[in-house]
Image (tube, rainbow, N blue to C red; front, side, top):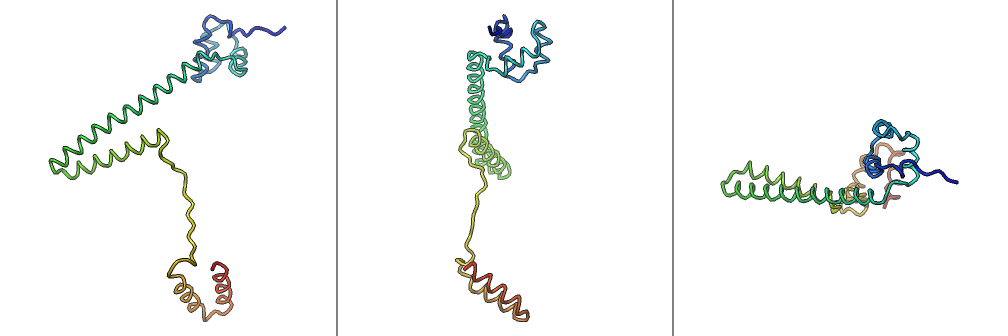
Length: 163
């Protein structure tokens, strides 16, 4: 017969689960709940015993906190926009530029938070032979290599390879 998890049957299970989800160490929890062993706390956490009630609560708190951050960013954006408007009306170019810079950073942060900003590196490949100045470049390289026949042939072959 399987043993009953001592953490699942503990009177403070929700508080323990919440602490585990938030990253509390089993050592710290064991010192708070002396009737539980570190191994019992570890088994409880690792075997999927954390209650869905607590997980739902944490998810809700995280979503709420994310909305709070966006709301705070929007409030800061309004203040920055107001400062920008006042600086422009007062013809204070330095202050206006600082407000524009702050608004730019705010919008960038907001876009990053809500996933609208793709920061993956872009791989751009340009076909050198398609450039309108490529024939002149090729001619200049070949001419510069005239005193060096072996290098000239090697470069000419390489340039033909990329055309």
